[in-house]
Length: 109
Image (cartoon, rainbow, N blue to C red; front, side, top):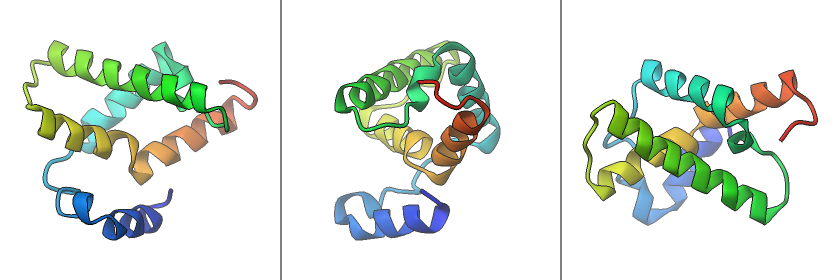
C-alpha cells in the first residue's frame, strides 16, 4: 500500500483509526528491524496468494518483533505492541520495503 491507500484503509476502520498514530516506531529503528528481517528471515516478505505462507510470514514477523523488543529492552503492553506491530507491517514503509526486496530478488519467497 502506498501512504495514501494506508490512510484510506485505516480511516475506514472505526476500531483502528483512533489508534493508528498513537505510538509508532522511529524511522531509524524500523529500518534496522527491516534490515535484520531481510538478512535473517526474508520469508516474511512473501508476496503471493498462499494463505498458509502469508499466515506463517505474519507469525514469524510477530515472534521476531517480540524477541527484538525484548533484546532491546523495550517493554510494552499488549495494546502498545499491537499498535507498534501495525506500524511495522501494515504501513507504506512495509509495502515499499517488501516491493524493493522482490525487485532485487525476483522469484524468491
